[in-house]
Image 1 (cartoon, rainbow, N blue to C red):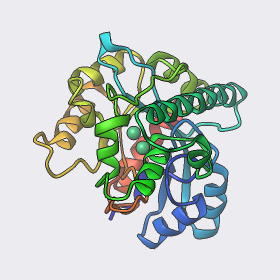
Image 2: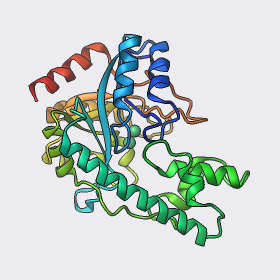
Image 3: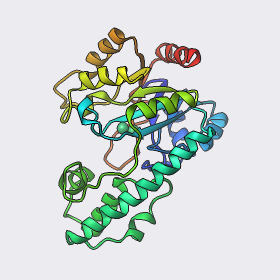
Amino acid sequence: MFPVDLHTHTTASDGTHTPTQLVARAAKNGVRVLGIADHDTVAGVSEAIEAGRQAGIEVVPGVEFSLKHEPDKGFIGIHLLGYFIDITMPRLQEVIQQVQQARVEQKIRQIEKLQTLGFNITVDEVFSRVQGVPGRPHIAAVLMEKYPGRFASLQQVFDEFLGTGRPAHVKRDFALTMRQAVVLIREAGGVPVLAHPGIYEPVANPVSVVRNACREGIMGLEVFYPYPASARTNWVGRMEALARDLGLAVTGGSDFHGRPGENLEPGEAGLTGELFDRFRQVARQG
Ligand SMILES: [Zn+2]
Ligand SMILES: [Zn+2]
């Protein structure tokens, strides 16, 4: 276990733990610094900070933006993390509102596509489980529940229907470009960090993605990440070297969602205290 885990999700997006539950679970694992990085929202941050205060854990306010596709730069399905952001900044709040509205409309259209594909699921059934931002996992969960045995896993639902290029995939109408997200995070006093570079491999070369993102102004790279054991490339090692070459700060985290079968704990991937101190230095210097 690591004392610092900068990448976790709560019920404010598609995690299964409320911020308070997540902080408690992290504390039990010996985590001392916990980053909350929900998809396109900061709604879980305040509760986590309060729970952290009581549990003696420092909570780093964060967000994980899903960016607009920019295929010429290899930016397809890219996630950008922002840490140490001022979550009350009006412009940040405004953009998050816009993104959330677009997400809601996108999920409704995805559900409609599934209906035309013969699945009997409704918008209400999906949205009744959403406590914060709706995500594809919410749709997948309803499908798995209503069609027991049809899908072995959430991944199978994505592979067959909801993933990019699959029949029930719908592009979102509004998303930030890499540049826009970098500027917004910096305006909010935060540090923009490219999330889990190794997972972009099937659609783009992670090394070019990092280099291009560097040109757009990212300041950090999520080097430490629980890549599947089957990954053929040692992404942690490669990205650590690349971050050093490019002068990027290093972060890491588990990407804990708490899903059944996830088999992961907060603190299982992350940073040593020493690496986190270095990252905090970068944040302070802006
Ligand atoms: Zn991500
Ligand atoms: Zn994540």
